[in-house]
Image 1 (cartoon, rainbow, N blue to C red):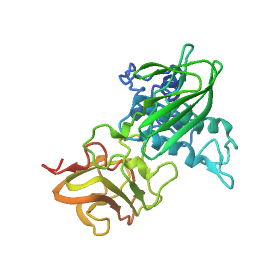
Image 2 (image 1 turned 90 degrees about the vertical axis):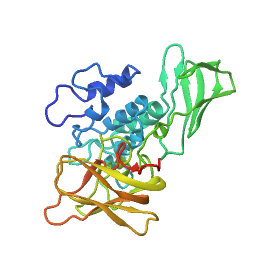
Image 3 (image 1 turned 135 degrees about the horizontal axis):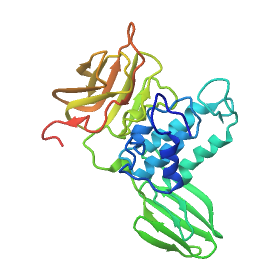
Image 4 (image 1 turned 45 degrees about the vertical axis):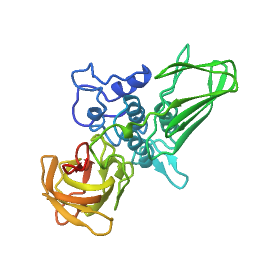
Length: 335
């Protein structure tokens, strides 16, 4: 399931597939190389590898209850680079002539994000297991006519709650995080929908609205604010902007920019109270250790923008988490 770039002592398919096949994910890695840590395993993956891998990353992110909305980033990463016109059919790899087409295995991987990722659905001998979650970019998911041991049921995942309705068959046992529940024939039960994006954070930009002047398919702007440093937003050219709307208008006095590569690109950090008038509050040099930390005089802001001016010899900007955990901080007394 994919190929690792560089030299590592574990194959990327081992941790991501074991998590799905064994129906559990361990947050404390038993492996000394950290191969269970999705933020460690995902970045060195060969982007020209097969199309299925990001689907398993999305499933794992949901199972791990990864703070933020990286499950959605992996969903986009799962299909956008692989679609081919004119009918949006799946290719096996991002590019090149030697690729399977139409790649039905990849289609199946895409569907698994919904069947087993956001739903947390697992079929066991004694019950169906559900641990539903949802990213804020999605309004809801409905899985129609699922089957288990002669039962027919539908799962409807909403932003606050999930409904399980038994259409036919005998009573359906459902194992949930709160315990075992039973759905009577023709009836439904309601369980909470887990929202990893609503976990406590001091980052005012995490999982908020974000736009960019350009993007490489699969390396979308949401990657800049999803709470994970594993996948980047990448522009298509050296001159670019990425703009975040903060959770609320407040005075901020610090921003941290986490770069996605060792490329040479500078940027201006700008703030705005209304999205129209912008003020430069900090400037990043072209070269960096990988993390640029800025503090400045508190500025009232509803929006933060990174402006990459480009120029001679400037690299195309890519950022793992321009505004990552604890990176857009309210000024003292503004929390």
